[in-house]
Image 1 (cartoon, rainbow, N blue to C red):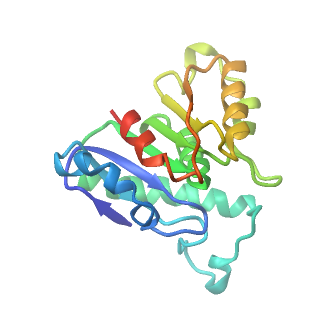
Image 2 (image 1 turned 180 degrees about the vertical axis):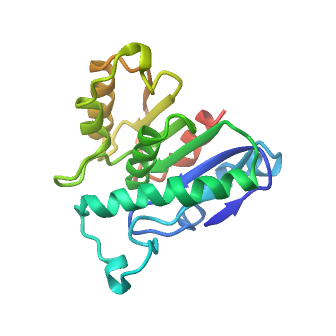
Length: 213
């Protein structure tokens, strides 16, 4: 884990499945979020990705992952987030309002963590998300198969932000997630920026800065 900032609302940063804790640093995200860090508005806890994580025993098996990862490994990663990351973050930061965020594949992991832990994560920011991988359980399929009475809806207090831009290659995946949420009457905010960019990271810092408050 890499921690950026010393105080403020904690943000769990989920990287791409094959990337490490410094993905956001390499893509200039913290240049855009400089004020959040320097003024103590937010403290960022940057996690390793699904492939980069060392989850228990198993030698080289811990680093084997394909474009469509085995469901068991995804479950282990989410258990690791709940059982190890959550207690650690809680020790470092007493704020009870947590944000989860990710770009591309990181948005997939952030959504899965938020869906599984809406009692802990209060806001999720999904930027140019990739929400479907092969036949594995994904954020969209979880919403589509959810059958929870409105009075016990775990998503009621979860602030969901889905962000993309005009020519994003992944734009339809964001639309699909938004449609699934509306079909189940789950409130959320979905924004398609009327801008063009060369890749998913070009506008990500600006998107994150605008929606982190």
